Image (cartoon, rainbow, N blue to C red):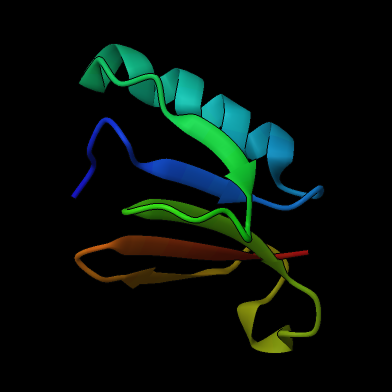
Length: 77
């Protein structure tokens, strides 16, 4: 569940996307979500990753994993 302390976790390749996601979510939620590295600790998180070698994703594919504490979005490179 999205909460005020949810962290958007990124690496260098997804940092700008993470900041954009935080800006888009703020008006809708009222939360100013923190953007941090993938190793950041915390409660709930949205992790943005790129898949280096997953050819099954195709050029524009992605995977989405959702648990009560974490959303992991892995996109094709």
